[in-house]
Length: 500
Image (cartoon, rainbow, N blue to C red; front, side, top):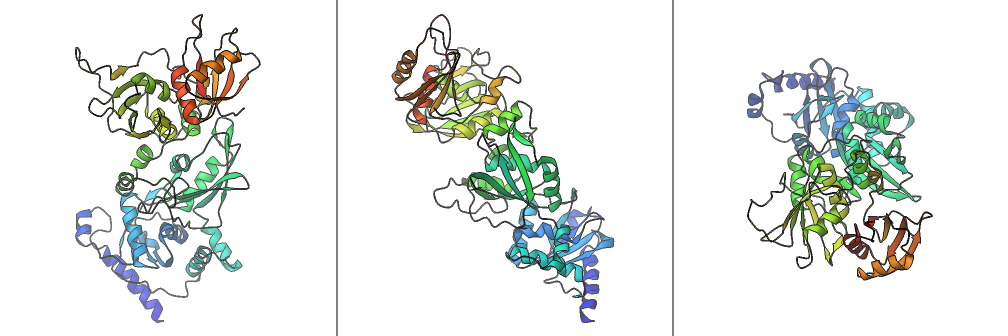
């Protein structure tokens, strides 16, 4: 009987805790009465139909959930985490990202209780908790709790990508899946020669919606098909934040061995404002951005992110606005380029929109240009300013708004489908009929590289040419794209996905 009176106390205390603030409008008063950290959390404004499993799902990504008490009539619940540390992480995370249950925003704060003493006779709650913890600790739930677990369908999806002709990155997945809810963790890996990912939402309902909407869809036109199932795991354990795995709730995680880490400013952005993630942190990969540009996959808009890039660690002896225009022009229509007067190893490049900027950044950051590894990030500038009339800035700023060389002027142009990462093999087109393989081999060797292989297409207007390194191919593209082959025919050069 003792346990039951405790529940009653719990319920009563719950209503006291909200005294004067049950409608949630008196937020000032709430702050004054904020309880000190506790492993018991008080959740308010739950929708009427919310189930215990959905409430438990709010806590799962942060650690073990040890107890739950729902106050149905009051649209409230108490959730007890295994440790105070887990509860603190959870509250900190949900102060930056509003938690939702069934698409309704809910409020979470520390409870005055230090633990929940509930009636052990509440079999269903115990079954759900037992099922969840069994799976969390890697066991398999016994049959009597399988049903309870089915109700708590997993917030984790297993994603397999078929026909992967383009690189699909962790960031692309985050971009696509976050349309359906808060993505908390992603792990990517290759199994049986197939790219796979585990992706954890904050809520199983979001996982269900994403699965319904995306299973069988192509990320990119006629390839990169998503095959989605629920995972048996209900929580992912991410040890490192890098390009293979990421825990968006723990920006402080190390990058692990030899993996590019998130830099500290990025980590700060994570913890400060999760909504800026889409704009600032997730470079779209070729597939997703090209598809978005061609209007095939409506990705979440890059709210507030600009189309201006900051490129640094350039070779200041060699770089020119024209060379940057040509290289960045592979991924979008460059409007303006400004090499910085006081820091000539850096430049600002204005693309036509934020998607193109994301695309160029994801492909060119870390590539070698004129012997130096360049760094590409989004700039805080919204536009690149031109020098005032009459001022000479030594030709460091160029306006390309009306350039005839833009590759993506025509909406739905084929060029959108032929955007590939820098590669040693280049695709050549618009070759005059009288130009031979030897002519082209000679031309490309003179650009300072070694030609490894060459192949004409059947009509001889196009060809593939393979240089010995990606850096040589980048250099050849900069030097020879739009090269006048005579008779006013200009050679077109792009990166290719093929090898010879």
